[in-house]
Length: 142
Image 1 (cartoon, rainbow, N blue to C red):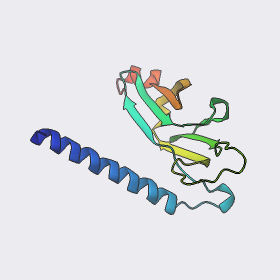
Image 2: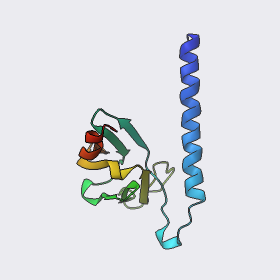
Image 3: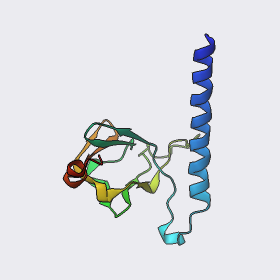
């Protein structure tokens, strides 16, 4: 492995570990009532595009009809319920690594400068396309 490749790999691993630590911290320090507590947060990718932003939310086993996308003043909030998969009667669970239950993922963004223009769900990935608002483009701040 070349030195540059090793450097990139190490940075990638470090960033991944920081993201995991941040997710755990958010879950641990969440100030929510027990009835509103969420068991997990799905991983996301946020990509800058020439038109605005593209957000990919990994939602394996979550039906598209059950996903709620809310636009707040300073964030996009994605929530739903991932049910535990059906197993045959009398089955014993040996390991559970894929999270299930109610979830909510709040993605802080300057929503006054963005608008949701498209929402698709394909292969367990929710894709949200947000466009920079026309006013931002006219003012040259996009």
